[in-house]
Amino acid sequence: MKTVLAIFLLILAGVMAGKSQPDGRGGMAIRMADDVHSYANPQQAKVTHVDLDWTVLFDQKIIKGSATLSFQRPPDQVNAPLILDTRELTIEKVETSVNGTVFKPTTFQMGAVDKFLGAPLTIQLPPNAKKVRVFYSTSPNASGLQWLSPEQTAGKKQPFMFSQAQAIHARSFIPLQDSPQIRITYSARVRTPKGLLAVMSAAGNSQTSARNGDYRFSMTHPIPPYLIAIAVGDLKFQSLGKRTGVYTEPSMLAKSAYELADTEKMVEATEKIYGPYRWGRYDLLVLPPSFPFGGMENPMLTFATPTILAGDRSLVSLVAHELAHSWSGNLVTNATWRDFWLNEGFTTYIERRIIEAVYGTNRREMEAMLGKQGLLEELAGTPESDQILHINLDGRDPDDGATGIPYEKGALFLRYLEEKFGRAKFDVFLKNYFNSHAFQSITTETFVDYLDQNLLQKYPNIVSLDEVNEWTEKPGLPKTAPSPKSDAFEKVAAQAKNFMDGKALSIQRMQKDWSTQEWLHFLKSMPENLGAAKMAELDKMFNFTNSGNSEIAFQWLMMSIKNNYKAADARLENFLISIGRRKFVRPLYTELAKTPEGMKRAQEIYAKARPGYHPITQSSIDAVLKK
Image (cartoon, rainbow, N blue to C red; front, side, top):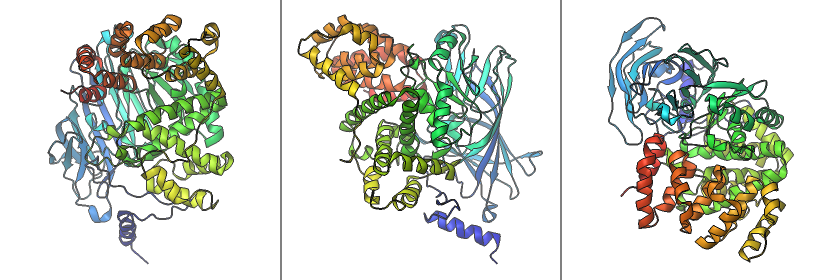
């Protein structure tokens, strides 16, 4: 009979050789991936739980406190150190403990700083150590935190702070193994100024107005570090359903609750297709407009941009997207950032299934068509190496991989599989996929293995591994890529043609009946070189320059830059200063920067806007406007 050590070494050897082991559920065990974006040494010492004890100091723009990490080491690594990821953290002292009660000082060393990865923190451990406690403080410039003055909030009276940890920004406010394949549970005690409410991606968020400045949280499901999230501000809560609700600043609460009213319906619709929602509550936090993304799928508490508050629920596909992450991304996670499409391609596909279930097939097809249009535009301007789903990000910032390609190309790949195998079979496959890999992080290779065993071989001669490889490992779109179709868009395109031909438009019907998606298609159907005169004609008809819908405004402003439509200049400047969502601001600055005059204007606007942007957005625009 083999010893425990021998068995462990055999398994470890298989993992390190890239060989999958049977998992007993019809799939394969998880490969231990080589994560080029982490200094961590999980094969030697792997963190399993983090206890946070924080004080949020607005006057200094820092979090100060400690992180107590529980970890495991295999029998042959009892003398191995613990290596953590950090970025601009001030480490005060480090202690270790055998029993979790008595802690003793230990030695540690900070390594050299890398511009993308930060610096490794190497901690020496006694052979029988089980916990490490790190006392530290963050930098006022932490890449994963944004500190807003009262003037930068909706209420104008209280400051606000929020985190954004994806992809590798958790290390800027927690010393930990910042890799998506390291799944951990966590608890937190958070002290804030009285009168402010702290919320986190965990159980413990208060639905009352009690704000005593001392809050406790617990996440009992193992999650990747990038899903640890916190926000502190003047927040109130309103229920949306039996397990859903919204937090935001008081002046935005009624508008947010109206816009997000269908959230509970979305949860129920997703459960019917993909199985139970496993996280307890699903709440949303509508943040100030400087939030750099549309949404962030922090478990139990999605962070969302206020740019989705269009007043007609036309932009709530973002809610469907972040909710879908509760299955694809949070439940089953990409093991490394080159596998990012496993999170976002799956989620974009499921988002549209949710939209179909709640709002109908036509809405789904319109959004899918817009998605493919945007993908084709992006592919045309993207190097072939970055058109690959299983992208190589060695030596690069993982944020470089956060383009629209993993989202839309990944979604088209899954739609292709759905169309080839039939929806009924593909739904069963996906539901089993989530069940068999629940609370695990996997690589593209692991997914392809599972796909081959549980779909391709089960229903042979429909899709080959070579065809799968073309989707995951080759640039561009395969010729077999699905083509979403919408009858409504055909009518929209006809109106766009009428306009270009000088024919009358059905203006009143368009204004009364058209959805955001139809207006976007109308604008996208215009020639790229429309000309300022035609732009002025459209603006007189429909007042696009002053649109309160962020998606329509963005599309119109892009057209305004391309066509030198000066009447939109003031709105463009206001838009760039008041909104920090990268999806909008980066393309606008990029388009401006294509001409010397535009570059000068972009730099002038950016000088005013930059102080209000999140560090992630600042980094992106710095790169666009570098001299």
